[in-house]
Structures are given as structure tokens and as C-alpha cells.
Image (cartoon, rainbow, N blue to C red; front, top):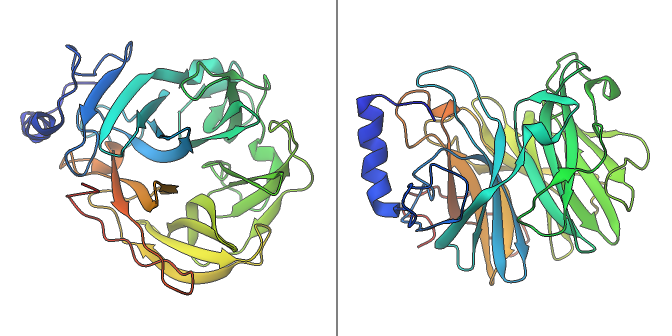
Length: 328
């Protein structure tokens, strides 16, 4: 990470005192595990993290994030790797060595954008948004590993989705923000910017199985996340720009989807919103990022936060209250 301004350093130093990593290098090197205790939001205060996705596996939460490393005050994203954290209780966390880097995809150029890891049949599949090296625009790749900590390797040797496969928009960045759900033995991939796309995946999890569809959602921008609770399916997403979070519900993962309203407001000091929703030990968590650690260019120096999410009796979700206290 490049050096920050004196003001920014004061802000970060203030926070790091609360969540000091236990290893000698303060977690700035990603070559060994780093343990820390979250003290409110943001939960990680010694480096920038963004675009969270989470998975529950064998009694632990595995949190996967992007890593913002843009120079100070730069109005743009710079991200080259993805990070992995785990926790048995949502309070004590361990950062593990980075399990996946852009360089793992020989066909890709750069930009380690939003991603998600999902387990199936003892394998772990990491779907990532990345810039293609030879096909213009963003693409979706998939890596695979034998355990949630990796190391992950390119599962295909080529992109799963490229910009020339979707023609609903004329932009080059509409194939981003992949999310996957396995429902009744069938895997589904959702993704997209300005258009929400979905397609079935083959059982091997690395090939599309049929045509690409679209979901029409009010003011859809990006960042889809699909989860299920009871008989209801929920599709949450980034809404408008600057981004809030909205959601729709359905009785089927294939729709039709009924828009239900806003779920979260604009995250503090960040133009983008990107959420993950998980159940863990009888509680539901809303995981997102904001720009709280740095006053300037917060949208490009983001930090992961966690708050509780609650449901109404009819299955709808209550508006998330974003707090500084978090889930203590």
C-alpha cells in the first residue's frame, strides 16, 4: 500500500489501536496468518478491503474480499489480489495468506474485482470479475481449490463469461460481480452491471448450462447476491448511483422476482455498495463495505463492515441499520 497523508494516517492509527494484528508486521505482509479482534465497524482496519462475500463451512465463516491499493487521492480502483479471512464467532478473525491473485489467470489482464466462493462436493469454486487480456471488457473467471484457504488455481484456463457473450448493453463492464447459489442440485450464476444476468451452471461448476437470461429490476446497478430462507428466494443488489441496496423476492430462483424496496442506505463515504447475506449460529448478518477509514477518496479505499439483518413475519427483510458498533 502506498503511503497515506498525515491526516489519513492519524485516522488509520486511531483505528488500528482497537484492532491490532498479533503478528509483528501488522498484517501488511500477507505471507502468514494474522489474528485480530474486531472492535466495531469497519472490522478490518489495518488494510483496505472491499466487495465482501462470505461462506459458512464447518462452523466457521470464511470472508473473501477485494484489496484496494490505489495511491492516495487517486480517483480510480487498483486491485490485484483477493483476500481471505475466517472467524468462529464473528468477532475474532484470522487473515490467511492471499489465496488468489490476478496472475493465476493467464488469459486475464488485471483488476481483481468482486468475487464469491462457494463449496460443492468437497471442492471450492471462486468466481471472480477481472479484465480480459484479449477480449475487450470485463470477464468472469473461476478458480478451484480443495479447501477454503486455497491455494486456488484457474479451473478452466479461459474465461467463463466474456463481454461478447452478453449484448444487452453497450458497456464493457457489464460482466462483473458474480454470485452463485446451488438450489436443489442445480447451480445458478448471477452477475452484471446495469443488467442483471443469470444462467445455469453444469454440475462441474465451470461451464454454463444453457442460455443467458436477464432479470428486470428497478434501478438495478450491480452487485447481485442471491440467498434462500425457508421457501423464499432473495435477490439483493446495488440500487442507483451512488448506490443503496435494494432487494426482490421470489418463490423460485428462476423468478419471477417481485421488488420489495430498499434494504440499505448509501454506505458512508462510498459511492458503491456490495453486500453478502449469511446465516450463522442462528443469526443473520449483512456484510458490506464503506469508506470510513480515509476521509478522501473513500470510494477507492473501502473497508468491510458487518451488521445484523432481521426479517419480518411475512418473510420480507427489515431495513439494515448500519452502525459503528457492528455485531459486538
